[in-house]
Length: 452
Image (cartoon, rainbow, N blue to C red; front, side):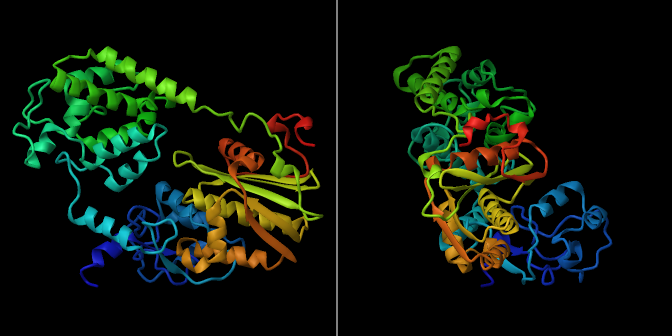
């Protein structure tokens, strides 16, 4: 147990219910990586003060004046992502390395590896390798290129340096420019032909930012920070193909003794990305609010509520949307923009709880709620297996028990386009608001004919 102490400290976080069991300045309750106590504005701290002193139990909200007295703005943003319980409940623990919050041997092993033997391609320390590896599988590209990017991040790409250290090759130098070592970062970003490709692309580059001497900094830039430097999404989405064709050009030089010009490498990458994107384009679900077959039908005389949440890690707001139909007729709808939830799944659960609260206020006490998030069904059926969401699930139980008839059902995404559209519109407004009505708000600019 003592040997695993560092692993537990890295992955464990206190969940806030009432806040009576969590000390503000010593317990790891801030949702960061790893979880930690908050950073304060002053050094004067009472170690016995608990989180409950920061919660207004009348409104079930954080005391903003108190937060501003104690914490800097960045800390307040993280704290506001935690939703205090609407009912009095005890605090608990969750494991941050899994979606459910339950500890698994696999996730514990990954943490132990990252602590004891961090993967390094360069002496300078970069961002979390675990995060960079996970992001590789979220890229909008082919499976082959996702795996290729993952290989680059994890140090599995067969550069001369990597082969030499594995006792496979005899020369660790770069065959293209003569550098002493061909590391993965050198191959993709620092070798003159590769650097020229990046310079010719539409991705902003500068010696201080990109490409840099750290592989992890370069991936961090391409994943996230490039947008801060002025790169648009259209330019950044090509980068997996650019890396792939830099790799292919390097291999052609080694195995065929052919030098591919940097502009030709970039052209290949741009053309392939465009062809893949056109082949995978689908109709944008935000173009209009149209009822699908699932949405236009209701079982018997029972109303059906469609819900969806919208979350992006780069934005400060979450979006929530729901619609109630009965016999093909729209009865009520709701949109809400809120402070960004801790995760996409938190946003989905927040949407479920908010829609239940609104339905009870209408009042509408007999309902079938349909969602395209299968995890919602799993956590509401076995809440003890999802400790990360313990506070929200207690609120769910509280509201569920106030319905005379309540059911939750999973449907495919294609059957939930209207709720998805409302949630995205709410998130895109960029500020906190809520709208509950029997009609579509004017700012959506939708014709009445779109709702039967």
